[in-house]
Length: 205
Image (cartoon, rainbow, N blue to C red; front, side, top):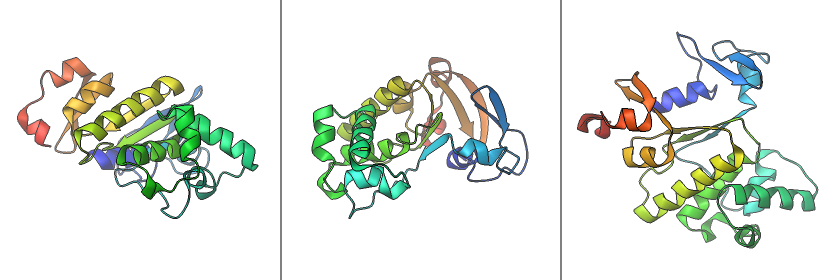
């Protein structure tokens, strides 16, 4: 249910019923309506990082951030934009420069996740959706991912939607929570309000 909802919000799946509107600038866009003036228009401003994200293993970090997602810049400009975006995802400037010509296999799990996040952020979306960003990560990598998400959110000052069953992670990165059960949203409120009433069954879901 959670992943399906995230894909509906991203405009990948068309909802079968109900209403969903996303604010783009000063306008509200009806995501139930296809076409370049409605859902197609909003999709340009939405970034989605899938749980099973893919970095091209035979491309460098720089190529993954630019060529492979269709952004064409002169090399110097591409490098500057990549460094700015990697810093936004939580790398230092020195580390950003250091990894530009590395391949994904030469990075740690946490570093690869940050590069994948940067791949979403480089398009400057107004809404960022992260689907199960921690998955089955070990505790140290989870901490790295948490810090990169918080840093990116603060740097961009845009809306982030985190889809997760990890309530501890949600508590650390979210201001508001929508709790789903059986494919339906049953409660929306501040993180403290909602997580204070979460049951063990909810944690397992």
